[in-house]
Length: 155
Image (cartoon, rainbow, N blue to C red):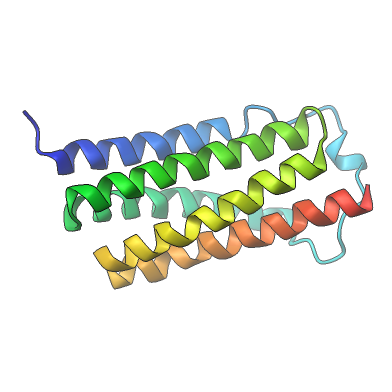
């Protein structure tokens, strides 16, 4: 039977893949998003193309690092919280792009940002360096939450 660390690392990578693939599933390419009033402070579009691949890679590295360096309980806690945060992030995508429910979308993304805090704490316990490298993800989901709320106010 494989060591729990191998299984936990594999599950972490699987969650990242689900996140990366699922994040674009409900995106509306009809032009609806382009017609929205945007917050003036929204980052330029090319930033999204840079930060998301970085975030996905770092989440994968954090998952493997936590699995290899923390106890079984802490590794499983990380995976559980990570899975909940990904579900919340995917719910944002659904609520934002499908029924265009800005309130539910914002609530989902704020939940993601809050769930990222214990992920960071556990990652820092496993590796200070990887914890520091995961901070941009926390900042990004926090900015995205504020953007989502702003879209709701402007549209």
